[in-house]
Length: 469
Picture (cartoon, rainbow, N blue to C red):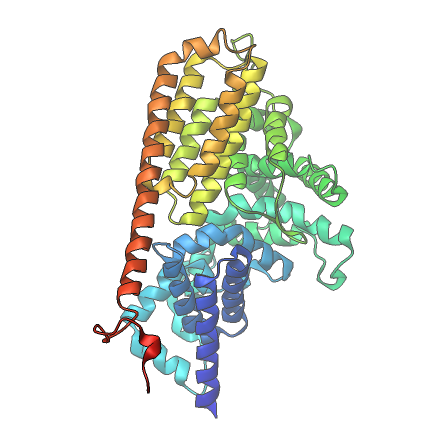
């Protein structure tokens, strides 16, 4: 009976991993991966099976390793964990360090197999590191306790603003009141795990370090006028930050890190935006642009020397820099979904480009660089799936560029670049024509083959319908 139950659990976990790796619905993929993490948390004995299923899903989705999958799904998984109201110390080692579990399985397969199949079940004694020197003398520490601080430090840019925004959302929605929790619960646990000291000074130090991440969340979410719960959550997060950190320090660090806040907003647009109590949110691109404008207005920064500067320059950045960053994300995409997300962020920059052209706040060299970026993206073979959306953005940019008000100075200054762009578009058209021709010929050859082989071995008979059986 025990063997049958274990076999059933194994097959069920394998099916969940296959669904996560083959489903065309992004939400289903994320939910299945979270299901595996949740199983490994509730039943540590099944950790190795869940790890194998997650690794297979990562391979099917085009990721190089399990760490890449977790990095891509980190916002969703952390939101699910916060919604479950479980402590950070209970994070499973499957999530905190898949590399450690892989090395243990590779180096100690027999020991782990005996531990899992033994009647006593899973035991954390195997993961104990033995006696190590700690802050309070010699102590025994588990392996997951050693890797947890590193994991929390790496996910801090996502986790800290998520913690500050999430608790008030639960309270305002009035749902799951039994699971309601205070902001300080997770913050103090996070600080205690990283610094081994639970004090207001350490909390202020951690919040100062993540000011750019907090502002990136708040500036985007506070612009959603239709969601009062999110606005109140952002207001409470700002108030909590100001209670822990002085206004002078916030203004000083905000001015220094304004360009990092802008990058964080772009990263939030590139990755899925999730908030506890609301799940994954599909926000209007205008909210991200308004958030970037808030960075320029609310964070003190010396004004640009240029009289007609756009709203990116006061934030310590430029459109050229943003395009370079997004192009880098696009080139580092591991699968079609990541490439689509990065192209969506590039389309967001195209909206900013159109506004800059209409407001006459863009210089000719910036415009030329942006047009050259279009050329490099559409000519890249890996970007063939996102090429339609990129061309749609290019069409909108050229429509604004060739308007009567901009035709005199900008269009004339970018004539040589426009010639290169025209040649590139012709090349894209030729490549599309050749690809379409190959598909048609392959279909036609397949059709001809089916016609020739439809009579089977009856080559000498013209009409097979007249055969008598």
